[in-house]
Length: 152
Image (cartoon, rainbow, N blue to C red; front, side, top):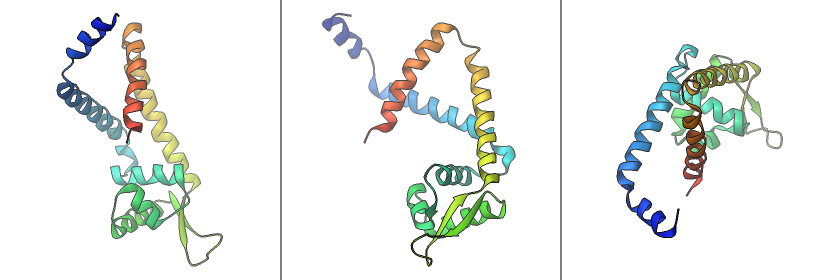
């Protein structure tokens, strides 16, 4: 594509319409993937907190509340439910015994792995329905979406 062709191509894209389409499509896909988790009995907030604990833990309740954008009472409730299910456990901080941290349990890790496997299997089945050309376009788009997600 020449410089003028590239500029014309850019001018053809309605950025507001594209933003709305990307937002709508990604939210629908995320909702569909969350629905696959419903059998676990976890709310979206609980599932997100469990994933954060797995990825970044052990965390204090305050650290987890900040990462999940929840109030301290809300995160205490979420962690209490995850703990009752056996998905997380509280442990004393190694350097300050007054501080309690939350970490994922073996049962919680197994739950996360099961959910991820189910979501991946569903996506694989949907991707296999696409033409090879569509899968290549989606691979290119996924890289762009990842860059958008990493932005400020």
